[in-house]
Length: 216
Image (cartoon, rainbow, N blue to C red; front, side, top):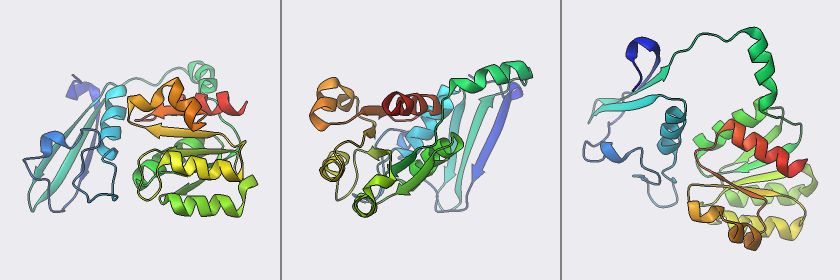
Protein backbone atom coordinates (compact mmCIF):
# COMPACT_ATOMS: atom_id res chain seq x y z
CA UNK A 1 0.00 0.00 0.00
CA UNK A 2 1.01 3.60 -0.59
CA UNK A 3 2.49 5.36 2.41
CA UNK A 4 0.63 8.60 3.14
CA UNK A 5 3.97 10.31 3.89
CA UNK A 6 5.34 9.38 0.46
CA UNK A 7 2.24 10.06 -1.60
CA UNK A 8 0.43 12.81 -3.40
CA UNK A 9 -3.11 13.13 -2.08
CA UNK A 10 -6.00 14.17 -4.33
CA UNK A 11 -9.38 14.76 -2.70
CA UNK A 12 -12.66 15.25 -4.59
CA UNK A 13 -15.66 16.22 -2.49
CA UNK A 14 -19.27 17.06 -3.28
CA UNK A 15 -22.36 18.04 -1.30
CA UNK A 16 -24.77 15.76 -3.15
CA UNK A 17 -27.16 13.09 -1.94
CA UNK A 18 -24.44 10.65 -0.92
CA UNK A 19 -23.98 6.97 -1.76
CA UNK A 20 -26.06 4.27 -0.10
CA UNK A 21 -23.80 2.29 2.30
CA UNK A 22 -25.28 -0.92 0.89
CA UNK A 23 -23.61 -0.33 -2.49
CA UNK A 24 -20.41 1.50 -1.54
CA UNK A 25 -18.37 -1.71 -1.79
CA UNK A 26 -19.55 -2.19 -5.39
CA UNK A 27 -19.15 1.25 -6.95
CA UNK A 28 -15.74 0.42 -8.46
CA UNK A 29 -16.97 -2.85 -10.01
CA UNK A 30 -17.07 -2.83 -13.84
CA UNK A 31 -20.59 -2.35 -15.23
CA UNK A 32 -22.13 -1.63 -11.82
CA UNK A 33 -24.45 1.36 -12.16
CA UNK A 34 -27.49 2.80 -10.43
CA UNK A 35 -28.57 4.65 -13.56
CA UNK A 36 -31.49 3.51 -15.66
CA UNK A 37 -30.87 1.30 -18.68
CA UNK A 38 -29.22 3.21 -21.51
CA UNK A 39 -28.03 6.08 -19.30
CA UNK A 40 -24.64 4.74 -18.26
CA UNK A 41 -22.26 1.83 -18.75
CA UNK A 42 -21.00 1.55 -15.18
CA UNK A 43 -17.39 1.87 -16.37
CA UNK A 44 -16.55 5.39 -15.14
CA UNK A 45 -15.39 4.61 -11.61
CA UNK A 46 -14.02 1.25 -12.73
CA UNK A 47 -11.73 3.10 -15.15
CA UNK A 48 -10.68 5.56 -12.45
CA UNK A 49 -9.88 2.65 -10.12
CA UNK A 50 -7.88 0.93 -12.87
CA UNK A 51 -5.88 4.04 -13.72
CA UNK A 52 -5.05 4.73 -10.07
CA UNK A 53 -4.10 1.08 -9.47
CA UNK A 54 -1.91 0.98 -12.60
CA UNK A 55 0.02 3.95 -11.21
CA UNK A 56 0.63 2.19 -7.90
CA UNK A 57 -1.98 4.19 -6.04
CA UNK A 58 -5.14 3.62 -4.05
CA UNK A 59 -8.57 5.23 -4.09
CA UNK A 60 -11.10 5.28 -1.27
CA UNK A 61 -14.58 6.66 -0.75
CA UNK A 62 -16.35 8.09 2.28
CA UNK A 63 -19.99 8.98 1.94
CA UNK A 64 -22.99 9.78 4.10
CA UNK A 65 -26.53 9.88 2.82
CA UNK A 66 -27.75 13.47 2.53
CA UNK A 67 -24.30 14.92 3.22
CA UNK A 68 -22.24 14.17 0.13
CA UNK A 69 -19.26 12.06 -0.86
CA UNK A 70 -15.47 12.33 -0.60
CA UNK A 71 -13.12 10.39 -2.88
CA UNK A 72 -9.46 10.27 -1.84
CA UNK A 73 -6.69 9.22 -4.22
CA UNK A 74 -3.17 8.49 -3.01
CA UNK A 75 -0.46 8.25 -5.66
CA UNK A 76 3.18 7.44 -4.91
CA UNK A 77 5.38 10.53 -5.00
CA UNK A 78 8.63 10.42 -6.93
CA UNK A 79 11.42 12.92 -7.56
CA UNK A 80 11.57 14.67 -10.91
CA UNK A 81 13.76 12.68 -13.34
CA UNK A 82 16.78 14.34 -14.95
CA UNK A 83 15.97 16.38 -18.05
CA UNK A 84 17.83 13.97 -20.34
CA UNK A 85 15.68 11.07 -19.09
CA UNK A 86 12.51 13.05 -19.81
CA UNK A 87 13.74 13.81 -23.33
CA UNK A 88 14.64 10.16 -23.95
CA UNK A 89 11.24 8.97 -22.76
CA UNK A 90 9.21 11.54 -24.69
CA UNK A 91 9.30 9.45 -27.86
CA UNK A 92 7.87 6.32 -26.25
CA UNK A 93 4.27 7.47 -26.76
CA UNK A 94 3.76 8.12 -30.49
CA UNK A 95 1.45 10.86 -31.70
CA UNK A 96 -0.01 11.98 -35.00
CA UNK A 97 -2.02 14.62 -36.83
CA UNK A 98 -4.93 12.56 -38.16
CA UNK A 99 -8.61 13.21 -37.46
CA UNK A 100 -10.37 10.79 -35.09
CA UNK A 101 -14.06 10.34 -34.23
CA UNK A 102 -14.69 9.03 -30.69
CA UNK A 103 -18.08 7.54 -29.81
CA UNK A 104 -19.02 6.60 -26.22
CA UNK A 105 -22.23 7.29 -24.32
CA UNK A 106 -20.22 8.02 -21.14
CA UNK A 107 -19.28 11.71 -21.39
CA UNK A 108 -16.49 11.38 -18.85
CA UNK A 109 -14.82 8.60 -20.83
CA UNK A 110 -14.96 10.54 -24.10
CA UNK A 111 -13.42 13.54 -22.34
CA UNK A 112 -10.54 11.45 -20.98
CA UNK A 113 -9.83 9.88 -24.37
CA UNK A 114 -10.20 13.22 -26.14
CA UNK A 115 -7.64 14.79 -23.79
CA UNK A 116 -5.22 11.89 -24.33
CA UNK A 117 -5.37 12.09 -28.11
CA UNK A 118 -5.45 15.88 -28.37
CA UNK A 119 -2.26 16.01 -26.32
CA UNK A 120 -0.71 13.61 -28.85
CA UNK A 121 -1.49 15.98 -31.73
CA UNK A 122 -4.68 14.46 -33.15
CA UNK A 123 -7.79 16.37 -34.20
CA UNK A 124 -10.64 14.84 -32.20
CA UNK A 125 -14.42 14.93 -32.53
CA UNK A 126 -16.56 13.26 -29.85
CA UNK A 127 -20.15 12.05 -29.73
CA UNK A 128 -22.07 10.52 -26.81
CA UNK A 129 -24.95 9.46 -29.08
CA UNK A 130 -24.02 6.80 -31.68
CA UNK A 131 -26.86 7.87 -33.95
CA UNK A 132 -25.57 11.45 -33.94
CA UNK A 133 -22.07 10.11 -34.58
CA UNK A 134 -23.33 8.24 -37.63
CA UNK A 135 -25.01 11.42 -38.87
CA UNK A 136 -21.75 13.34 -38.37
CA UNK A 137 -19.79 10.72 -40.28
CA UNK A 138 -22.37 10.46 -43.07
CA UNK A 139 -22.23 14.21 -43.63
CA UNK A 140 -18.47 14.10 -44.29
CA UNK A 141 -17.01 10.57 -44.58
CA UNK A 142 -13.60 11.79 -45.73
CA UNK A 143 -13.20 14.03 -42.68
CA UNK A 144 -12.03 11.21 -40.41
CA UNK A 145 -9.06 8.85 -40.56
CA UNK A 146 -10.13 6.58 -37.69
CA UNK A 147 -13.17 5.72 -35.55
CA UNK A 148 -12.90 4.75 -31.87
CA UNK A 149 -16.16 3.45 -30.43
CA UNK A 150 -17.51 1.90 -27.27
CA UNK A 151 -19.25 -1.45 -27.63
CA UNK A 152 -22.26 -1.15 -25.32
CA UNK A 153 -24.35 1.93 -26.12
CA UNK A 154 -28.07 2.73 -26.34
CA UNK A 155 -29.91 2.49 -29.68
CA UNK A 156 -26.85 1.36 -31.67
CA UNK A 157 -24.04 -0.79 -30.29
CA UNK A 158 -20.44 -0.61 -31.45
CA UNK A 159 -20.76 -3.41 -34.01
CA UNK A 160 -23.89 -1.92 -35.55
CA UNK A 161 -22.23 1.48 -35.74
CA UNK A 162 -19.17 -0.06 -37.36
CA UNK A 163 -21.30 -1.88 -39.95
CA UNK A 164 -23.21 1.31 -40.82
CA UNK A 165 -19.98 3.30 -41.18
CA UNK A 166 -18.35 0.59 -43.30
CA UNK A 167 -21.31 0.69 -45.72
CA UNK A 168 -20.48 4.34 -46.34
CA UNK A 169 -16.69 4.00 -46.33
CA UNK A 170 -15.38 0.42 -46.23
CA UNK A 171 -11.71 1.39 -45.85
CA UNK A 172 -11.94 3.38 -42.62
CA UNK A 173 -10.42 1.55 -39.62
CA UNK A 174 -12.43 1.12 -36.41
CA UNK A 175 -11.11 0.53 -32.90
CA UNK A 176 -13.52 -0.85 -30.30
CA UNK A 177 -13.00 -0.02 -26.61
CA UNK A 178 -14.63 -2.58 -24.33
CA UNK A 179 -14.51 -4.08 -20.87
CA UNK A 180 -15.39 -7.58 -22.14
CA UNK A 181 -12.42 -9.93 -22.63
CA UNK A 182 -14.51 -12.13 -24.93
CA UNK A 183 -14.63 -9.32 -27.49
CA UNK A 184 -10.85 -9.12 -27.88
CA UNK A 185 -10.23 -12.40 -29.71
CA UNK A 186 -9.15 -12.79 -33.34
CA UNK A 187 -12.42 -14.37 -34.52
CA UNK A 188 -14.36 -11.40 -33.20
CA UNK A 189 -12.06 -8.95 -34.97
CA UNK A 190 -12.28 -10.77 -38.29
CA UNK A 191 -16.05 -11.26 -38.19
CA UNK A 192 -16.79 -7.69 -37.18
CA UNK A 193 -14.21 -6.05 -39.51
CA UNK A 194 -12.65 -4.31 -36.50
CA UNK A 195 -9.05 -3.11 -36.76
CA UNK A 196 -8.35 -3.57 -33.03
CA UNK A 197 -9.95 -3.98 -29.63
CA UNK A 198 -8.59 -2.00 -26.68
CA UNK A 199 -9.59 -3.07 -23.19
CA UNK A 200 -10.90 -0.56 -20.67
CA UNK A 201 -9.49 1.17 -18.74
CA UNK A 202 -7.60 2.65 -21.68
CA UNK A 203 -4.02 3.84 -21.14
CA UNK A 204 -2.35 6.55 -23.21
CA UNK A 205 0.52 4.31 -24.26
CA UNK A 206 -1.71 1.45 -25.41
CA UNK A 207 -4.14 3.56 -27.42
CA UNK A 208 -1.31 5.64 -28.92
CA UNK A 209 0.63 2.57 -30.06
CA UNK A 210 -2.53 0.88 -31.35
CA UNK A 211 -3.46 3.91 -33.45
CA UNK A 212 -0.02 4.14 -35.04
CA UNK A 213 0.04 0.40 -35.75
CA UNK A 214 -3.23 0.77 -37.66
CA UNK A 215 -2.57 4.04 -39.49
CA UNK A 216 1.12 3.67 -40.36
